[in-house]
Amino acid sequence: MIRWRKASRSDGQGGACVELARFPETVAVRDSKDPSGPQLHFTPSAFRAILNDLKP
Image (cartoon, rainbow, N blue to C red; front, side):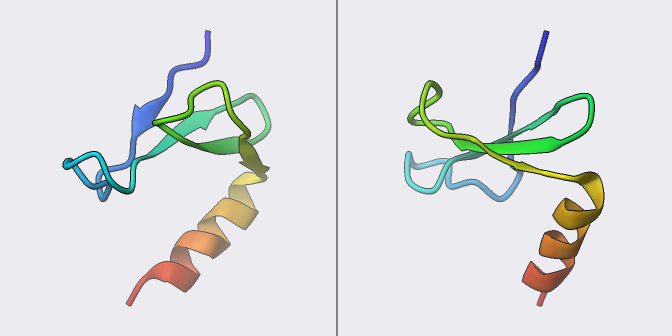
C-alpha cells in the first residue's frame, strides 16, 4: 500500500497542499486537493536535485 504524506511546508490554510509518496523506484508528488489527479514521479536522485535547487 502506498502511503501519501503532506509535505511539511504545505499551506495549512487549504492553499498549496503537496503530498509525497515513496514508490518502489520513484518518489511521487501530487496535489492533495486532487488525490485522483495527476502525479509526478521522479527517481530518488532527481527528487534530491529538485529539493537542492529549491533550497534558499
